[in-house]
Length: 347
Ligand SMILES: C[S@@+](CC[C@H](N)C(=O)[O-])C[C@H]1O[C@@H](n2cnc3c(N)ncnc32)[C@H](O)[C@@H]1O
Image (cartoon, rainbow, N blue to C red; front, side, top):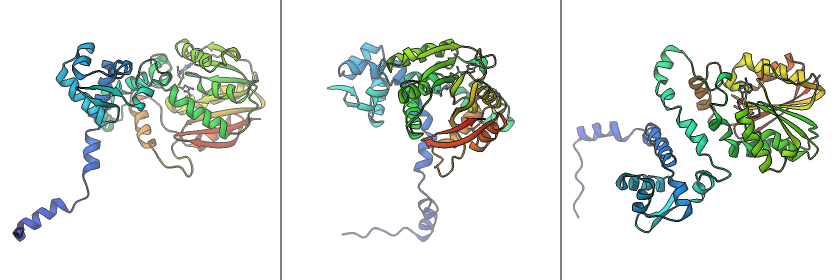
């Protein structure tokens, strides 16, 4: 046996400057995160998961079917295997894993590809984060009322995620007597659907832009509650609703995109159309829900600065203050994952 030679003292000292440092692996993963997102986006663009869902295919066959270069597609499939999204191999055939079948195959009820597309479409805006950080000049249109309907993939495409949370929050709030419900800026309608599911007598008015209402209508039908829904397209600045018309009003995920001034206006509108004693359910991602871990909140806060003109993550107490100004007394507070729901009673 030969002894491993001891490096000269000067080499050992120099080496220690590199080996006795914290593990850099998390930094490398962060730095390469953009490539992972792009690889998933390209697999969705090409329709890889949808094509493989029918029957396993070899790399060569899939390349022919999708009109792709077999070498690059082969490497992409290896990456997707590494992500846990396909299994098999290039010669015997690839198949989507359970996660990919559930969320990445077009036509699946929980398909998230439209939402992911819209998130990836923020690429250029995020690439300009450095000049934004220097100048502070914001300009994204994600919260701009004029841009509504353009972000259908972002909002309606997230239904499979949102309906789980909305149902969980409604269940956590306990038995509901929702009555006449208004879901203001309802998106794909998950909150109205959750309330209609919890209260078989609830009748829901779903309000948004026509493009989003078409999605809400389909989703309400999917859940068998469309017969208790009506759909009202209107700008939230000029709604046709009467004073005190509703027992329950939902305002979900609107304030953080729109900014404080518009959120205050929306909460005043909720108060106006609620009957005295009626309930406001205000759900949003809030900055620091008491006793909750941050999860992805800091990144979402940054995303609102990148993608909206006025948006930002609000504090629950800011919403409580806006509710109080509008004549609504805050009551319960429930957090599920990233979403916090405040309830309040109209005075
Ligand atoms: C972030 S989404 C929230 C959707 C839904 N409430 C939810 O919880 O998923 C905001 C919604 O507000 C709608 N919206 C934005 N500006 C609007 C306006 N001026 N009038 C009516 N709806 C508007 C958009 O179409 C979009 O569906």
